[in-house]
Length: 167
Length: 358
Ligand SMILES: Cc1cc2nc3c(=O)[nH]c(=O)nc-3n(C[C@H](O)[C@H](O)[C@H](O)COP(=O)(O)OP(=O)(O)OC[C@H]3O[C@@H](n4cnc5c(N)ncnc54)[C@H](O)[C@@H]3O)c2cc1C
Ligand code: SF4
Ligand code: SF4
Image (tube, rainbow over the protein chains, first blue to last red):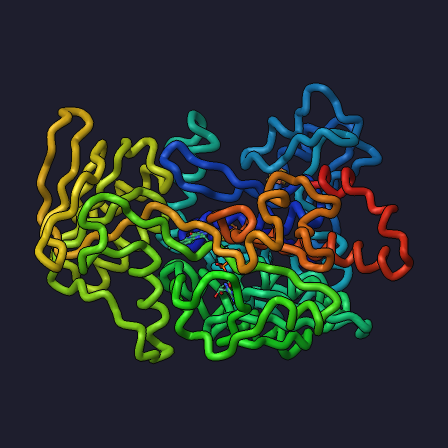
């Protein structure tokens, strides 16, 4: 199996500066990595983890969500019907599917598909001032985790999945 | 195949292009090397523009290097990003160079580093366009009685020397807090940065005074909890009334808004972290009020035709991401303008479209 790429945000290094969201917005209008403020006032980016078993892909009845050679989970606007139920958006455990006002009304991270084709990394990875976002093979994510990053990640999950996530 | 290691450890301001684009015969001057100026420089240079960045400080990076404490931002990553702009994209940096403004010198933190002074017209004469990215450096001062006593600082007065001392300038001296009682006023991120720095510098005790509650603190409750765990006293619902002392600060009197009683706090150092205000060179000439209101013909263009503006100088204190975005947008607007102007088609510019795509 080829390498399966994904993003990893180390929330313990992140200072909530919004640069990742800003460069994403500059490139794509609707940012696919988006800032959220937790109840405790931590400001963090929510992002797509290009899950091995992608819930969004499973629930889409139109087959509009697929995986490319690098492992990126892609949303195909040509196949998407923009269903009212927005199953993909609801299914995603990381709140990484975004509603837009344009076109098919959903958008998600494609790991900067066009940039990858030109040998560049995703823009958020390049511009994060704190080196908090890594573009890596999914297998190496485990190695990037630290005690601090796990703790910070748990706080973020408690924010986006207040009921489901008990640990 | 994407190579992983190329840019690890570099804040890649030229992130839109791997190689430098073929040079075009256009030159842009950028005033200020903070995140907005550096992002603007990266975008212009990767489109083949000749770019000169002027900064009054000895090192590019703006508040990322001279304001935000180094435990939160890895300065090497910024430095490598700047070097990459120089080497890969051919950007020229002129540090220790202040672009002259109507205000007298030594007004804002860091002015005394400027060895060279140029005027805005020097820049407009030498470049096809100029982008003002000079940030928001003048600290809002306390106005209560005793605010001018020794030992009373604004957040930037306190934080700037800690970062700038490396550049060994005789006018920079570290705030002396070792073994002292430090009171910080405010609850934004810079207040927290002052608290962390005071702790690192060995303060005996640190108190944070805020007029509202922890739930309303701009830095968030998580941060308040964290610094309380470090042993900082958190005093909410208290507003500063008077600073007392002979020559130096000795006491801060605060009003507790729950009891409406005055409380006395012993203090050797008082730092007010209550925000910064923008300090644009040529505030009036550039008509920045109108740009802020969006009352312009061209996105991010000032009252002077070929002078654009971006970042905190326009918006007031914000965030790195907002400054970066503003810099990128100003450049998009600037390059559109130069393109259309070259063909005398300025009136075809679609301001509404540019404004809407945010
Ligand atoms: C203590 C503190 C903590 C902060 N923490 C965070 C944080 O955690 N996350 C976050 O996102 N943001 C934070 N910020 C805000 C962030 O740093 C700013 O929003 C951002 O740096 C603004 O970028 P800028 O490019 O507009 O201006 P700046 O970074 O201020 O850069 C402006 C540059 O212009 C130069 N300059 C000014 N006038 C002249 C002149 N006349 N001639 C030549 N050069 C000139 C200055 O020397 C400076 O280098 C913090 C700010 C402070 C003060
Ligand atoms: S959108 Fe959500 S469910 Fe789909 S791959 Fe990304 S993180 Fe997983
Ligand atoms: S750019 Fe980096 S530090 Fe800033 S919010 Fe995004 S992940 Fe966090």
